[in-house]
Image (tube, rainbow, N blue to C red; front, top):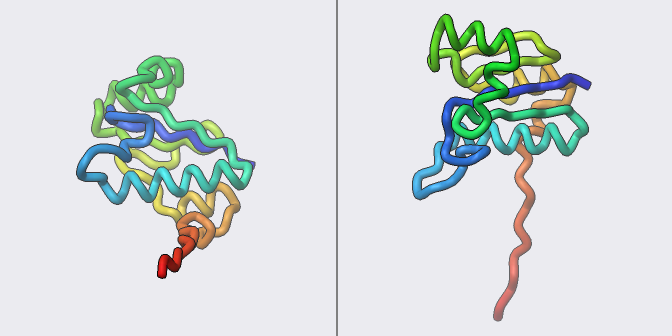
Length: 117
């Protein structure tokens, strides 16, 4: 299985999915990465605000940050190769790189309805 690494810009929390107005794009990415992990894909996500060392240790990431500054973020590596710069991958791209069908990356569990009457 592929190893997917996402280098996020500075976010308020590990996923950026918090606060009163949640960015739907961050919710989609967090969901897709969570489901990829559940399927056994090696996923690592790094937040510039809390894990700056990860951005320096990886030579490819450090070079891109030096050249493009924060415009390079978010940045995605797959098996150590740069796949996406300056935007989050689509679910179709995650599917292509991981081998997990795209339809399985936006699953929504059906909620149980309670009949209170």
